[in-house]
Image (cartoon, rainbow, N blue to C red; front, side, top):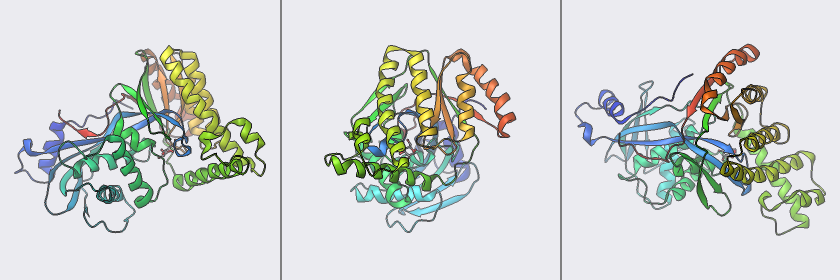
Length: 393
Ligand code: GLA
């Protein structure tokens, strides 16, 4: 457990020179970053045209690079020294590894009419892979910046998020919504960002000064996430289809309320449970905005608690380890709110807490969680960070 690693410009330029080419002048090396994200509330709502409230965080992927004229992204991993190279102009078939996110982003940037350029780079990450903190979106955004001229892709950040989402949907083959790429592209230092996934309007939501964000990793590897995720999407689509038989104007669960759902015949219990979660989770996002604005800590705690219970019981994407972490956190004096975050099936919880309670939270989790699960938790105190961009210091 510890503070986020810092992948500053100085360290990255010296790693670039050590691992690739010591003759390159440090001033000629660009350093770009793509942040991970933590979702505060609004889970599985993005692909139902609903609301989400994520924050980009200061756990991130950083690439130090110089542009090349060979049309290839050649990347050395800081951690292992492994080097991989992909053709960014003529993107080949998927390889089934991390380079797919780079190749898919190159392909979608090109189809969007944006030029891509090859580069030679060194990649470092403070984002634990497979933790549910969106290392894939971070990699898509960091590589989009690396393949673009200084200043980044020539589109607004929200459009860049949609390009990266297409890379993941169409090239990598995961049917994710827009939230992760949105947070990584449009994040704001010091605030969460609320996105209406239907209108694509978004705005910064500043958290009360006295709240800090912690992320706790359960240590449960996220397995079968893609297939379970796609099943949940299919459940939601079934619910929409059933409601549409009576209400043809309905396009997504965003348009459905509990009364309409009650009238829908021909709806299996599973799809009904999933739909209730989505309808109520959207309401919880809006209520959370009010509670944050009013600094109403008990209300924030209740909303997070209800969101977690609904993800556990109705959407069925939690697991005993995440439930235990939420229980231990909520029982710590000074902790305001806790819930699982991200797709689920392992990964992390998010905790909003008063700063003085962080040490107690850490102590309690380190003491009780391994004893009851045999797993090692990891806790990070994170800050809301800006979206992807050039790293200048
Ligand atoms: C994953 C997906 C997101 C979103 C969340 C659940 O992170 O990539 O689009 O659906 O799960 O809220």
